[in-house]
Image (cartoon, rainbow, N blue to C red; front, side, top):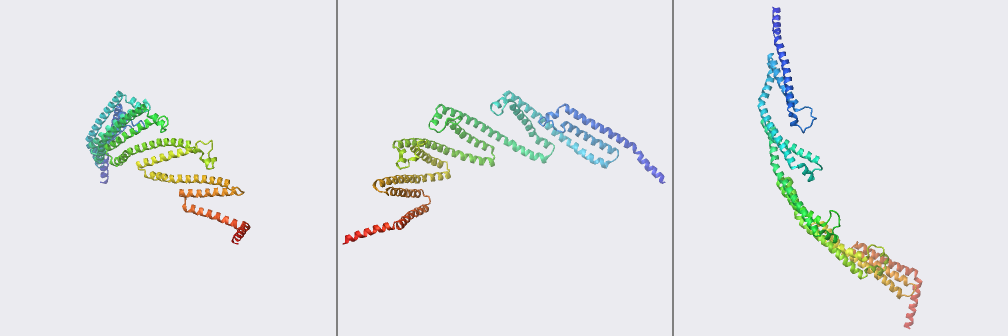
Length: 501
């Protein structure tokens, strides 16, 4: 009984051998067929140059081409079908069912994939035609030559490469426009939704960007045209010679009055153009601060122009006053004043500037400084206004101190000469020198006090010097001249006694 059961069980397995062999034969044939079909698909796609047309700008360094990838996909899909047949022939439904479900899902997605592929094909055709149209238009208009002429490219080769990059950009931009439709056809909502929103925002921004670029380009052309016309007009009127005549601008290449005025007008036209372009972009986070800054500059420009005119007028007036002061002081023989106050060694004959020229230069500086303060006040540079005002307010004190020093030097030498001529004894030179240097010391302290250099220190030093001299005189007379004083006091006392008797 047991032997019969064993033989029956053995027959059950041996009866399945033909089925297994047939299934293995189907698997082998199916595998060979899948592999052959996959290679055939790859070869057919390579004949159409599909990869070169679609990915021509990516480069030859890719590991796998698109034809190879598509051929592999076909191969593996057919291989899955072969395995499903194999497992069904062996009645292994537990293994075959997941593969069937997977293939059902894939085959259910085939219509969507075909729809997406059709949209992608249409996009590729549209992108190819637009790229071809742009290339033809660029060749017709000789765009590469114009790029070199407009100095947007250094040579013809670089210009051609730029045109080709623009053509490729148009091609992929068109593909990008169709990409939301491809993703939507495949029902990939998680990607297509945000991507469609981002692409819509970009497409909505492109007209604004184009309008802003067009405004900037037209404004730049108008500003450049006005600058060139105005510069040539001012040159024809001799404005450069006027600037050189008054010493405002030197005769240097590219730095003359007409070109500077033309550049200023160019900026005047360009700033409102930039403001209008930024308003077109409607980027409030960037445009509002930039527009506010440009508006502030635009309102400040008239003040800057007035300030520049004031500075130019101050320089011209300063030069005129310098000439007048120098001529007037030269006629008054002002250059010999150092000799009159006894310090003629300061006026070297090899000196580049005479005393009258130095005074004229100081007068010019004061005039220019006054106009500079007014110009700074107009452009609202309060810190510099305060600084320049302080300098101007200090100038009278400085001039008064110099005048006091001059008068003191003159009086000191005058008193010295008077005492030497009046007192005819051995001590005349000593007394004259003491008087001179006493006047000098008093003059120096008065000048320092006038300059406001530490009033308390100057006053204390003057009192200490004066007290020290008095104490030194008293000690010298009291100790060293005691016998001399007693002698003359005794004589004075005898004379008084004789008069009383």
